[in-house]
Length: 244
Image (tube, rainbow, N blue to C red):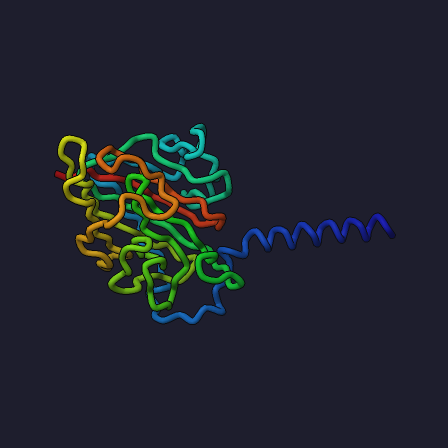
């Protein structure tokens, strides 16, 4: 009887652990949905000819761990995605400068018991310095630290978020700072489309390093950085197109 009871308890524990693991991407029936399209995943946008594919859903060969280098420690999951899973931020091995377009698809977990910056938090840092925030900000009046915000610099023109657990996209057009003789003459600029909606238009970046960025000389190339903020945010289909 004791053995049977122990087995039952063990199986129940495994079941609960499985449910807990699935919960962040489980049911969102308690979320007040504003419009039907907020429940529809964005379509996967193929990389254009000549673009640099940074993540194809199969390997993290283009990435390294921010702290000390070495293999990126996030985990590959179903659906051709990678999930934040501890081990710190990851950065591209390749560094980028000039004028380019970065395409990233992401989704945030549903964390109903968390609030503010603890709710599906991550971030995409262009050149490792300038963050476009990733967060569950669905249905909120956006601030500059909400999803789509250029962190602590610019508030999105409109909240274009989809519901948590639903796939979203950023298309980030970036112009690196204009430098002469190693000195910055003009700041970096950025335009962002969120789920196909223009949320930033040619914004001048008033700092050389938003909070938690990698910093460094703004006149030098930098990586693409994906932030580990401790929440299981997922990414897929990441590519970069160099522009004239």
